[in-house]
Structures are given as C-alpha cells and as structure tokens.
Figure 1 (cartoon, rainbow, N blue to C red):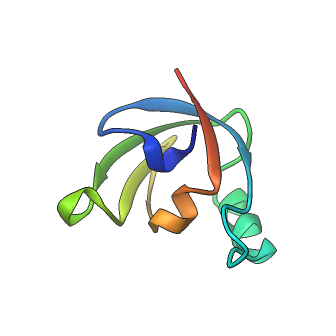
Figure 2: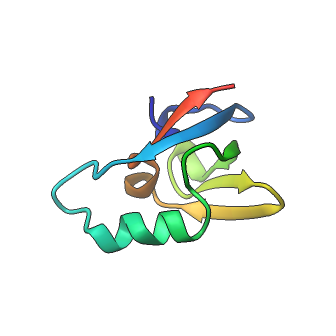
Length: 80
C-alpha cells in the first residue's frame, strides 16, 4: 500500500520509494529519501488537508512534513 492510502492516525513503516507516474522525476524521490522517507522508518499520518485531500501531514520521528498527494503516492508502506 501507499502512504496516500493511510487514514488519520494510522502508523506504518516505509518499505520503499517508487515513481508513481511518469511525471515523477528522480530528484523528487531523492528529496523524499533525503528528508527521511527511507526503508525501515516508522511514520504516522497525522491529518489531511481540506476535503481529505492534500497536503498530508506526516510525522517521522520528531519531524512533521507536509506532502502533496503525488509525493505520498510514491511512498510504499506497510501498516504497523
């Protein structure tokens, strides 16, 4: 499953990064990895933007990130 499929409060472990569409460049995947979305890291989806869409507020460790939906669709996760 992908981070974009989590519901509020769900916890998961990152399993990997994949380009969810041809519009996703390697630089976006590198940026996600650089900020902490690497295999084995635990995360929690805190909330979504208006209407349940974007941005998605995600916490890894002590840090909270706001991700676009297209970025969340690149992060494969496994529920904890």
